[in-house]
Amino acid sequence: MTSLHSPATASAPPTSVPGSIGAGWYRREEAIMGTSIEVELFARDRAEAELAIGAVMAEMHRIDGAMSPHKVTSELSILNAHAADNPITVSEGLFGLLTRALAFSELSCGAFDITFASAGQLYDYRAGIGPDDQALARVLPLIDWRHVLLDPSDRSVRFARHGVRIDLGGFAKGHAVDNSIAILRRLGIRHAMVAAGGDSHVMGARGDRPWTVAIRDPRQEGAVVAVLPLEDVSISTSGDYERFFERDGVRCHHLLDPRTGRSPGAVRSVTIIADDGLTTEAFSKTVFVLGVEQGLAFVEAHAGVDAVIVDAHGTLHYSAGLQGSKNPG
Image 1 (cartoon, rainbow, N blue to C red):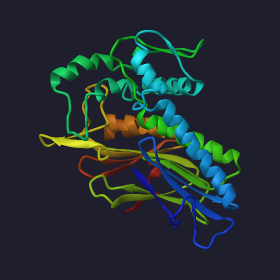
Image 2 (image 1 turned 90 degrees about the vertical axis):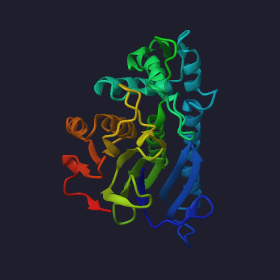
Image 3 (image 1 turned 30 degrees about the vertical axis):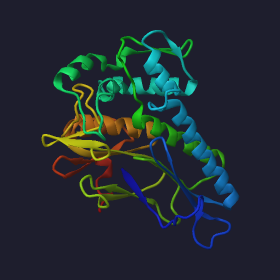
């Protein structure tokens, strides 16, 4: 994941720079959506900070409740349980997110595909368990974004085949960060950072300088491979170090190639920078699957998107828009 360098301190939420009783920087961190949610912002006083940060955390909880694959009452879990039997009407938010996901699947020719979960459910990364070739062969026909059928007339979702499962993964986190930034803007906040695991957005500046975003070394925890000065952008990092186990010398991680149901091995991490979190999250997953050459070509074909790729040998690759802007970690 990426990390943001700033001089903020941490104590009771929301925290503030020592000695600050009014205008200043405030920060809070909570565990939501299976990851660390961080908010840091400049507010006129503690009351404004508490209102703004509380609104962000509430939105994170709302999206987690609707889109978590681990909560049986979530809309996503209900789809996975019943959408192959009959159409399920979903909320406007989830329907819009699924629409965006399928559009990106088409754009990426299936390199991004939320039905990867049809194979993903066979992995247990904590226990170090993955499917054998026979088990994988049985579920591969279920991985196809075109199995997810959307009807905008009643906002219903249906799966074309039994056994299809979807997982919005980091896509929901990118969506949550986008919504949170919109909330902060409506509340009059102008300088802030919101992070949900590997998905972040920086708004405005950090004092008199840009936010500095560090890209971690995929193989050395605590080390960084690059630092980027950024303002008013979203950043997403997908890495093979988040959830994985080793089997026969091969790293099996949670980023699956929809074409094979296996973990790609050509790159270690992909960081994408763009205007919004849905774009950065979808691009980071796509480029990870495509690899360095095809991935960079995909990025260069779309205006307003940049990438930093760490390949399987630890070599860094930058898209054209970042040439000359990076600093080694």
